[in-house]
Length: 251
Image (cartoon, rainbow, N blue to C red; front, side, top):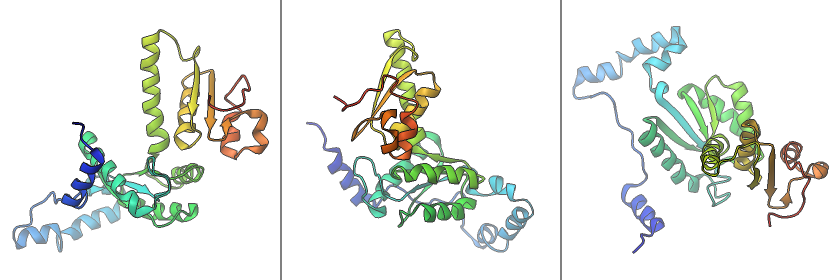
């Protein structure tokens, strides 16, 4: 009998109270351990970093810790379910970071969907982390949030729904082309969905050499002839896709 993974996931969440815990890398068994891990010993580490901020990458968890940040506005296939409901997904992503890459990560869900407020919060958090993984933030806000943070932060900023998805889909496309013996330049590609992932996938295809890509959003095929009526992010992609100027639905 096929297992009900949703029921099992709920049972697991109830059993463990989430997927993560904080574990110390150092032992604290006596007074000397305590004085090294905390005061007065920790002052030496702080003083060194105060003189050279780059030492934070050598002397603190910053070197191997990323923030997984979401506002809960576009969670998986669930939509705008809010920060609390987004937390299990962010915990899961943090667990994947650790299991498959050995990277520590902290899930952070924000009780705001205001673009400027999110940017300022992430900028304020940046000194803690070696990088930021933006997750499940709805389009088109996600585009501005990511671009602004790239420009204004001195750590890597990565929007998983855009670039992570695009890299995986491009890899799958390359493998599929090998199986059918065709090149990316000669095939016709239809991208079903004009959200953050779909648009990033499309840009990745174009950068890889695709010549004939058509994007379909929920309102129909994106066509440059309709650019004046389209949202800015759709108008921009319509100008470089759909060379046949097709219109209509996905079907």
